[in-house]
Length: 344
Image 1 (cartoon, one colour):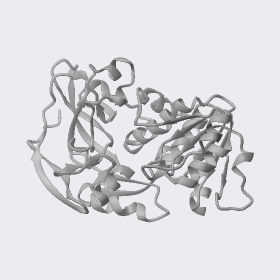
Image 2 (cartoon, helix red, strand yellow):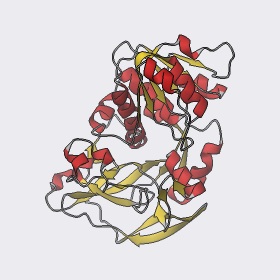
Image 3 (cartoon, one colour):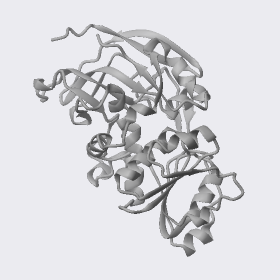
């Protein structure tokens, strides 16, 4: 059995664009929890927003915060009530801790829990560190077929899966995805795992349009091309992953009557909506806030032929270099950066 040290390394956001390596005590797992030795942490757009701007909407960084929530690792210790046989198990962590008592939790909508504690969402610390604690049932065992990076990327993959569930994607459907970044790519893979027959992607960046064809998209278009007509797509589902207002409008126009639009990307806090179009076509318009019970499906889908989560990783950084990882998305060729935490 590996000896657990008394202290660990932690990469801490002190303020906007200011991080510092610190030593902190290794946390102890409470009853029902596990202690996980971190191996891989994906860098999310939310991490970048907190680093660059110090906030995302109502969530404001008011004190030192540890970033990172796309995480995989190995169980190093367990709290009371958890089988010690789980020690040494490779896991992907679902980075949320709902209260399990409120109306939303009891109705199966735990993602809307008003007492939710979510890694790297102020004031809850995240996973840019050596060890983290998590509820035992939210530390999902992963098969050897998935690498540490792929296990960490089950978190953003879950966003795409939840978006497809909300969109009601069915076998043979036509799905429009706007935005060819990491979430757009993972949404395409999710749509194909749901059986979508045609997955159309729009993105302004040529390299992303070319690359997205390797992640489940059947075609990719430049939305600025004057010959591109969104209405001709007649999509069953539209999933918006860019946050761009023109993409929302084009996607709504691309839907068939009775179609569903799901907003994933975060753009301006308010945008105009063509209410007449939504009403006359009976479009269902909804949003996505995290996910509910998606890890079992994500783990299964990640092992399907043609799904390669590792292919999204374009750069690796050591824990001490997490700040470089947070600025790496300024490169348009970047897809997903990962912070690697070496094994003890």
